[in-house]
Image (cartoon, rainbow, N blue to C red; front, side):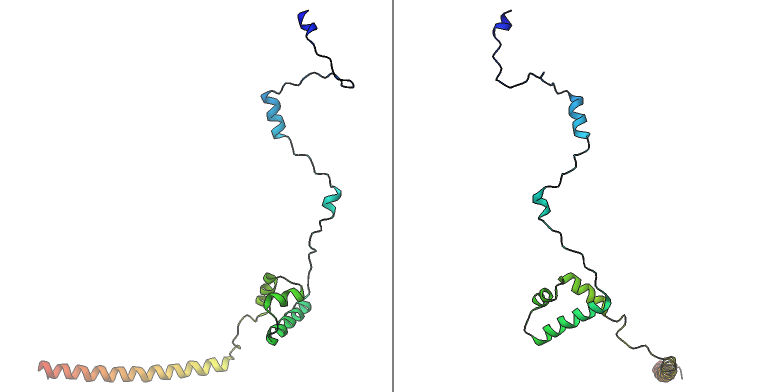
Length: 149
């Protein structure tokens, strides 16, 4: 009965609830529980994500020509020109790379290839003859020096 005498009075309006004892299993269950879903609040609704835009090939070409005109005039820098057009630097370089032709040299016709091949074969024959003549002359000179002839 001594314990009953030492009880402190409860504040008004407070309900009596038994204290919960946290055990190790309760802690583990709490850690592994799925996170609660975030409820959208009015503060997050104000933040707007940038809109993803898709441009057609014609629109891309038009924007690239506008940028080239601005740069060739020398009045603006690349970053300023890109801001005026409304695209990022990475987008600009991706578009520029895609707009370049695959090979900068014009395709050679088959007749030109054949002519080049014939010319190379003729030059090869001529060089072989020159080499053979030099080797014969050098061989003859060495034989004279050694007294073989």
